Image (tube, rainbow, N blue to C red; front, side):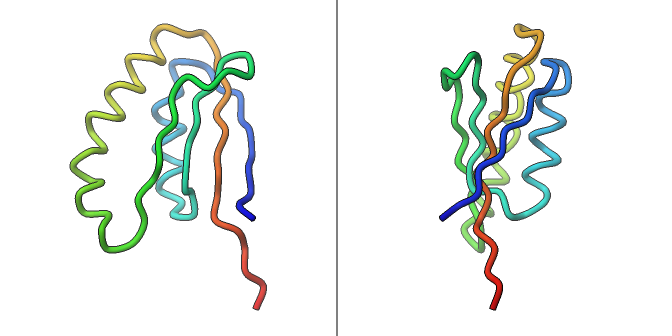
Length: 86
C-alpha cells in the first residue's frame, strides 16, 4: 500500500516544494488540496517512459505556480511508493 503524507505550504513556495518532492524519485502522485477538497492531482511518471513527462513538467509547474499566486496556504498530499524491506 502506498504511503501518503500531507504537508501545508505557503502558496509562494508551492511549485518549489512540489519540484523537490518529485526529484526525490519515490513520489507517485501529488494532490493539491484546500480544506480537504482536492483541487489538482498530478500523477508522476516513473521509469523509462518518463521522457515524455519531462516535456509535460514545464506546463504543469507553470500551472502550479499560477495557482500558488492565488492562495495563501494549501495542503499537499504526497503518495509515495511503498518501502520494500527485503
